[in-house]
Length: 207
View 1 (cartoon, rainbow, N blue to C red):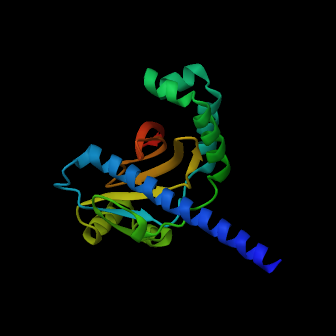
View 2: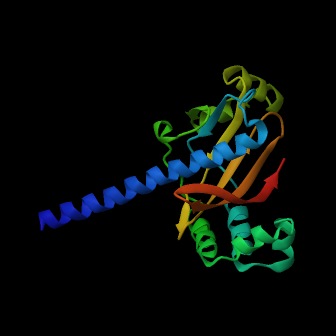
View 3: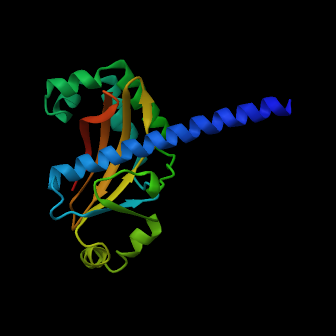
């Protein structure tokens, strides 16, 4: 009996460890994708800050994920800017499964280990409470203080856990940077030739 319990424990641990590594791989791809769009050569953006917890409006993410999954035509077409490739991807059954999973796990926070990230820039993980302390005296003062601490930063990222189905993955990502510049997006990725590729970005909010 003890041997059986030990074997079960090892199997569960190995699956959890493998999934944790896979999540870090996906977080790295997503962050690099964002920063590449702003500064591909990393001439001006040389680091990123990642929050240890996601602090978002979970109901908004669940609502958008549900509308994408159920494919409410007019809304989804507008949301995806009538891009036929994105629309086709969202209609994939694996994506629908992922969006359902995302609704279920949006309340859970991932455990992010900086040593497991593989980014093109240096990264720092800070607590949600430490991040909020920057803004005790207002947003404008807070961002000045933040950039004194993290000069040339691509801002602050936070993530949901990752939902998987087939060769697809789905997660929610928030990014905040100087002033009111920021976004919350559902990100859909596909594994192609052993590499994760960002396929669709769905805006939940923009500032």
